[in-house]
Image (cartoon, rainbow over all chains, first blue to last red; front, side, top):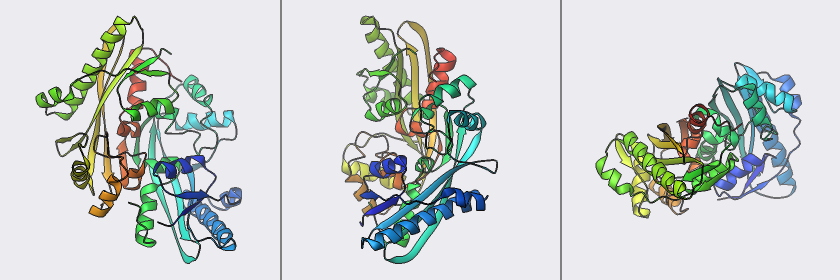
Length: 198
Length: 198
């Protein structure tokens, strides 16, 4: 299959593609997420617009470099009762986020955009996974924060690391919780771009 | 917290503990799984008995070595409509298993046993996660088998590797799908052995 260009600086997304042994390169686009967040309070629309913006920037760059590739962009947020929760700014902020998430369910929503350098077609979709946390004491939350896993992660946790201890259950795609809904990606590649990975 | 001894030869289980940054050692016990399988057709009872047998063997060995530790043992099977599916013996067998699982839901059931070298208490529990596969063509299944991921895995797939592409959704613990229900483990450690990991 054609090489994938991942328009994302997320290390977790790279790990997922690597785990699936897909050939990929990384291209970091400078999309100002705050501009989109100001204008959009609907979580699904927000992540789809951000994924779209990242994919289009990557497409422009790749066309300038005459490089044909499949472009995959994604953006992930946490939603709790309609409130959009992004990444924590510092430990105190991470504590407030995790305190809110403890003992209840929230949604991980990822917007995904897939296109090719020389193909006008762009597919924009989203996936949503419900995640339920165990109840946690303040001491446990602080203990978790000290691992540093909260940094750079929507919702201030990482399901494949120590947070696995307090994630009671999920409903939906597990790769989506890390930031890249692989089954959604594969369905788009298969149906819309005639790319078969298996 | 006290050191964990993982009574399992599974590399996936080690990866989960490593990912969670838990201190652990591995102790491989020689429990003849076939003996248990002949005697037990109830999937939940089977994995619980196997986890129990592994934990007790490990306990005996550790007592001989005068080594105090928390002992964690587990056993995982796939259940599809009451049928117990274990590991594939060869590629043809892996194909038959994956063909059965494609386009439908099955259960990953893990039995877990937790004890301490010098503690008569042993907690035996299980966790069950429902996993739904996308529809797959025979060609896609063979393509997947060629990755070699089927080897040594209950159900002949590995959710954190290429199989992420065709896993539509899961319901339950995601670490349980890899063979170690971390939230269940943490709840047991917290409640029954007064061990706090956070």
